[in-house]
Structure formats: C-alpha cells, structure tokens
Image (cartoon, rainbow, N blue to C red; front, side, top):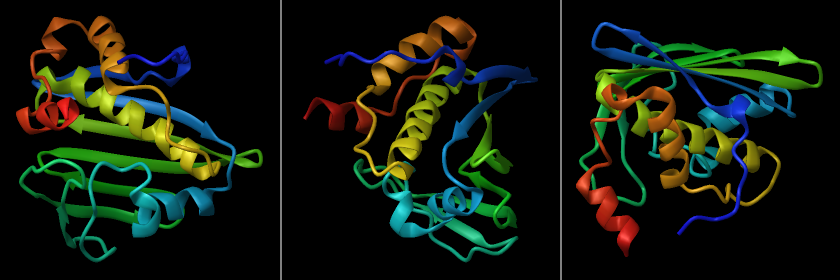
Amino acid sequence: MTRNHTLAETDYGELDVAGDRAVVRFERTLAHPPEKVWRALTEDEHLAAWFPTTIEGDRAVGADLTFRHRDVDLEPMTGELLAFEPPALLELTWGEDRLRFALSPEGDGTALVLIATMAELGKAARDGAGWHVCLDNLAHSLAGEQPSSVEWEEVNRGYRERFGPDASTIGPPKEWEEQQQR
C-alpha cells in the first residue's frame, strides 16, 4: 500500500562508493536544539520512535553493543561504540556497518549529518531507504508527531533509481518481508 506523501529531493542520501563498500551521507536540518536531538539519538525511551533496533550497552567509547530488532524476529547484531561526544558526535558499528551521527547548531535548530558506511555496495539502496525513513521518523518524533506516513517500499524505489543496479542487489531480509505481509 502506498500512501500519498511527497519525498523531498533534499532528504535523499548521497551515495559514494569506496571499493566494495557504500557510503551514504544524509543531511537534515531539525528545528530543535542539539541537546534535544542528542537525547533522541542516545536515550532508550526516545530511540524506539525512530531507530530500528534497541541499543544495549554502556554509552562509553569502546563499549560492546547489542542491537535487537523490536518488530522483526532477526538475530541480534553486535557492535562497538566508537565515539561519544555529547551533544555533537555519536559513532558506532552496527553489525558490519558503521554509523556516524554528527550534530551542530544551526540557528535555533540542529544540522544533523548521518554517514552510513555499509559493508556491501549491493545493499546501499535498501539501507539508504531504511535510514531515510528512520530520519523522517526522528524528525516527527522530535516534533511530537506520529511517525512518517511514507513507506519504506516507496522510498526504496527512489533509492534504486538514484543509486542504480549495483547498489540494489540485496533486498530486505526474508523475516522482514514476512512481517510486512502480516
């Protein structure tokens, strides 16, 4: 089912290929101060509104992390906290991928840059669409609104077109597709 929603051209991530890895960079301006955005990035009670997994582990550089999907029965992933500089920088490994969230003040709000480095180029469109939807949901959550009405499938079509066939060879996990059909 596709809902009516206009995808802003400026919200799409930009792909850079580094060997067999994909690096997707997102830039968003959020109408909230960095401290509020930081809490949404790091505190458990806020993560559930936008981040696809839990983040279990100490918020300290070098800490081991465990990520569990909330709505899909997938094996937990592991990672490590690489940088934790409140309220400006959060970097971690998320399974085989690396996520870097950088915040800086912009007027009364915050400039957010997410750089997602993916272990395989073939999943760039899939995961790029996923992070796109997550960032939409983060913005809605910060504003006290319901999650975005845009669906991953709709956004993924746009990323497949933008990133091309080499970045679109890996689709969603079977468990996720089964969950969506229920």
